[in-house]
Length: 316
Image (cartoon, rainbow, N blue to C red):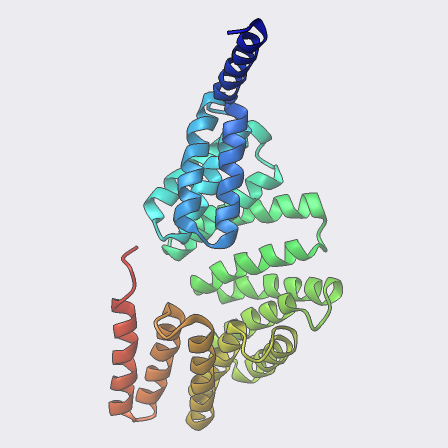
């Protein structure tokens, strides 16, 4: 072998060795984290969870209080929450929150977002006493960082008000929703979907209080906004229609309510599929209205269909 040939082989061997060198942990963590975030954007929750688990393993090398570990733990908890793995999600979200508070401080916007996610989990589980202080902290952080008139503050007010609504604390919910509505109308405009959402929340509170004359114009206005802004076939419009149908049913206007339920069902099935839990929810409300209207056999058929959809849902 010539001297030149030997040098070429040696250089190639060095190149192979360099390519085979382990990547620094920071690079491996970043690649896994970004791959998880991209998979999550595509809706590939299983793939995202796998990448985030890798990212958590790599980030643990940086130390238990490193912000990168908090980011990956938070992300994995969010995916588990979307997969309805509530117990695993809660453990991760609590761990991520502790890391973020230590690394970034208790009033950091990232901490506020984690508090809000954990609070929503508690709300879904009916753990309202645990959710309330978290949502109050989130509101305080957003008001301090963004100012009292920011649209994000309006969203946080709405979130806290929906907690009070779930607890039956309608008098506590009302002032928060009036304030949120004022912010949304001033900062986003009267035709923005966020404005519609707050109108809906306030209308539903009035409905629960049997203030039907106050509720109806708000629910009609929310429906009109969402039809213009999101389209007449949007799932949000199905929600508006269902709320208005509940109002009409409460007032004994069963024919009007039935038309809205049927339209809401058509939209929800077209947008989300016939076995989506949202379809079951509309069917359950529709069956109660039919029973109230003394149409028991029809109510039974509708309720049976709702139960069948529920039975096909994966266990949480």
